[in-house]
Image (tube, rainbow, N blue to C red; front, side, top):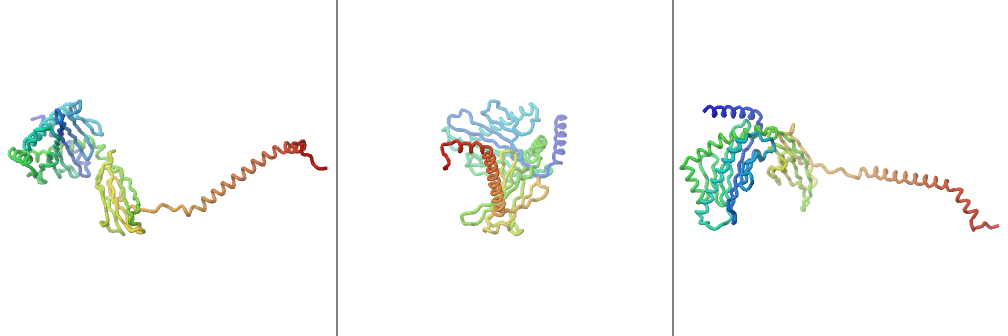
Length: 353
């Protein structure tokens, strides 16, 4: 009891310390996959954990270590006992998914070896300040059936025979209540603890690099694409305006995507009539910017105004080269003047008398 009290006090201290620095929303996600295919003696099981799209833990049943591993870009701050406990929990998760797969094969009479996949996604989101906002737990069987916890965290949505059996089992054993408790309390505690360990990395801000690209379409209209690159965190607002009003027509926008180096990228494009590009502005707002950025496409500077200067420089260089060449030649000619006259006087050609 005393140990539990000490743990609760320490966890509360961590929570208070980290929530004072949480400005945006944050997420924790765990992804599990179990695979089976012909010739495989034991199904392959993988487990990865992400906080804000950054992987921090991982496990692969085909690896030599057979232990869950720290994979975060910050230093491991956990003791060996923690990793041993987590590994045991992962092995229990693996066994649970194996049992689900066996039940699925039994229901559909798939006694012959084949390709089968079961995936589970679980996690929670927190608001600024560390308050719970969203929880998810879903199971996907061969991409045909799934069971998913509804947003109220009270009931399950199912799409097949096996998942209907799972729903009945979970409701009969109060599994739903356990899941809800985990998502709203324990998952949030895990997220805040990970945020505390990686706060120098996860709570940083990298301002986006922004530029606009101009491209002529086959129909002679213009596509203006506004890019925001290498920013962190992922939350960003990217919009187009026409004459100061938000532009929604002929607008294409992609979701924020990771770039692979710990930062994110996003773009939004708008189709405009040729010659009206200057009426459109791209508006970008991000935590790393001191104020929103407004960017307008500008045509590259024309080379024609500078052509006379370029021509003058070239002509000047040619003239200078000609003068230098002439002076060098003249100097050499003067050096050879006496020799030239003697050749004429002592040669075979004689002047007429």
